Length: 171
Image (cartoon, rainbow, N blue to C red; front, top):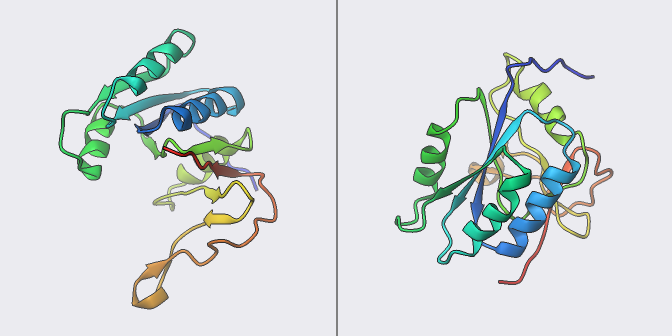
């Protein structure tokens, strides 16, 4: 079943810049494969060098929807970095995505937005696959080990149609 996406559904991505190779692959797959076009990418750079900033500046001339946020001089605090980047956005939808992921299916963002914008939905997540096709993440279930967990981890995914691949890079 497909759901309509309102025209105000501008979507913002927040990525953390740590690995230049991982981020390059991430951005190339995002800009090259994603069919939904009304989105903005904010790179929150918490690396220790200027490598990530230079990479983002390399992509920016061709992608006006790419922004850079320098958080290298701050103590690492995952929540604070996310919150600072989110405050810069005016979209009703935010997507937090690490730099070591790659787009597999072109309509992945439409699929997530269709669900995220339904009034009864609180949060939406993508199925994440390891490079060998095994599932890394496909949701969280409450009650596992008296807490919560990912029940489908390492199962072989039947189809990558709405998935994002998790890429392994040596650092």
